[in-house]
Length: 221
Ligand code: GDP
Image (cartoon, rainbow, N blue to C red; front, side, top):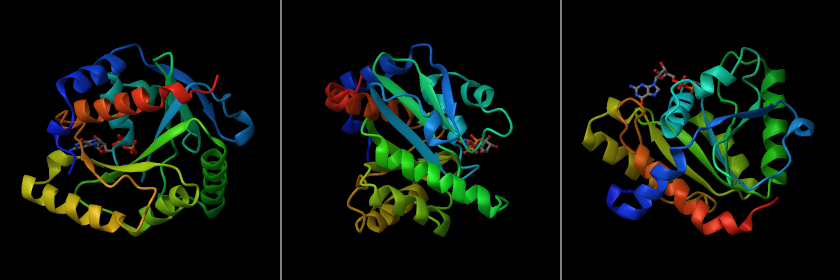
C-alpha cells in the first residue's frame, strides 16, 4: 500500500504547490482530429461512470466545479484537457461501463481511447479510479486491457475511501495489488482517496508532482 510516509514532506509540499495554481478548462476532444497538439506532459484519469472522477479532479485542483462546468451535456464522450501549470496537463477521460450507453457510443469511446493511448507520447500515466467499496469489477477489465496493450503506465486509485472501514480498505488494496500482478504496465501500488474527507489527496498530488519531476524533462513542445 502507498502510505503517506512514502512521500517526504518536500514531495507533499511540491504536490501542494503544483495544484495551488489556477486550473482551468483548456479544450475537449470527441475525436482524434480534435485532440490538442501534444504539449508538455499529460496525466489522465479514467474510471467507471459515477466512480467519483469529477469529484477527485476537483479535489486535486481545489476547484469545486472545474469538471462540472466544462462537462456540458453531450460532452461526456470527450477527452477533456485542463491546464494550470506550464508543463503539466490533466486529462479527464470519458467514464466507461455505463450500462445505458448505446453500443455505438461504447465503440466510439473505445476507438477514441485506443487512438489517444497509442498516439500520445507525452501521456505519462493514467490513474484508473476504482470505488473502494467495490474493488475491480468486470467492467474495469477492458479498460485495464486497453492500457496494458498500449503499454501505458497506469495506477489504481481508490475513491470514496470514507465509505469503508480501515480494515476493509486494507483488504481491498491487498486484493487489488494481487490482481495487478499479471499486468506489467500497472503500477503495483494502490492509492486510497476520498474527495469528501480529503484523505489521500495530498499524496496523489505528491505522486503527480513526482512524475512531473522525473519525466518533465521528456516534454513535447
Ligand atoms: P464521476 O461520474 O466519476 O465523475 O463521479 P462524480 O464525481 O460525479 O461522483 C459520483 C457520485 O459519487 C456523486 O454523488 C458524488 O457525490 C459521490 N462521491 C464522489 N466522491 C466521493 C467521495 O470521496 N466519498 C463519497 N462518500 N462520495 C463521493
